[in-house]
Image (cartoon, rainbow, N blue to C red; front, top):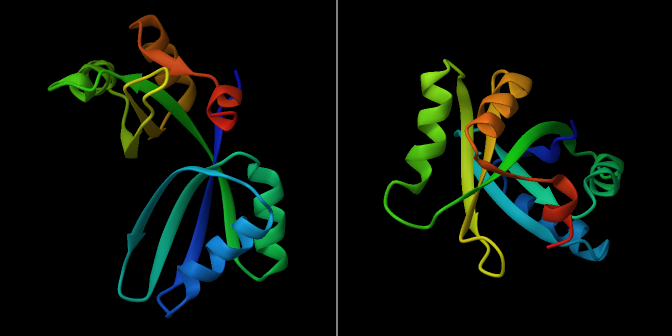
Length: 144
């Protein structure tokens, strides 16, 4: 099975560092599909889903960024109260640890999409698939 590739970019908490990152991606003419940022007092981790993750990773590393590619799943959820709970319940009932998640809205085909990073990606994929969760293929996310 093929997973969606997420870029995790380590950013020093310095003025302009996030903008510099996004400028590099803009110059590559690559779209960002989803993002999340978490920070501490000294650094942040910018998580991105982009249309061409390998190209962005290479260019950012050329510009002295520390970048990691991580496997994640994109799952469609209903944009209604409890929509996310259905997916999380499947994971919880099968003892699959969720490391983190973030979501975005895509209104052409799906209501909402959640990006999941699981401790056991293969088992999580199996459980979600067998539980009739709508797992979105990487190519579909990249081409949105």
